[in-house]
Length: 249
Image 1 (cartoon, rainbow, N blue to C red):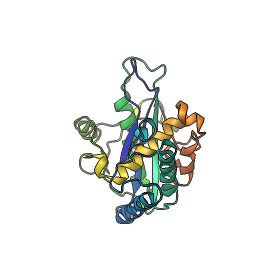
Image 2: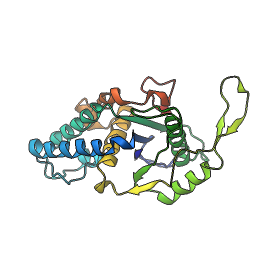
Image 3: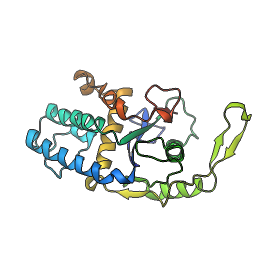
Image 4: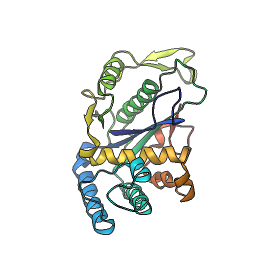
């Protein structure tokens, strides 16, 4: 699972209401296929729009800054094409977690709540084979943008020992300790400049955040629904209460 985020984890004077994590999950047997598709896609974006093949796709910068000397409508077109390219891949799935920071108490830990939820969903995905090409009781690794590496490492190591999950159904009140067992190794930090899959997660997380609270340019260009272009590959197993499987906290 490759992961990136959108928004910040602050509760006080934060510029963003939402904190979003988006994870791209694929079986290791399809890893090379994904890389081949993404490299081919980047070459097409070079031919069509003039985007440097090795230039980083960073959605918020694409919308907020003039990068690579491309007009903003061209940069938006590249991002739209990115989503459409991902939506065609029947061997990946996307898991999304959203924290709405409105009315959260001062003690609420946005970072831990979001990441714990994502790791729990990844554990379920591996256990039940809820991703293309997956098998029950599989194992997996997590690769993230190079942020908060130490904090994530400590969090995952703790969850491997103590991971309380609230009881559901007829199990009564309280929680069960269900340590994560299928995520191997610590989360690996990758500089997004060097990882095309992490860049894809950046675009996904950005447009999920824009679906929830679009900025003025996204509103003006009527692109707040671009996230919906990913419908074919969304992991709907992650949430039973959301039509797109988005886990909302």
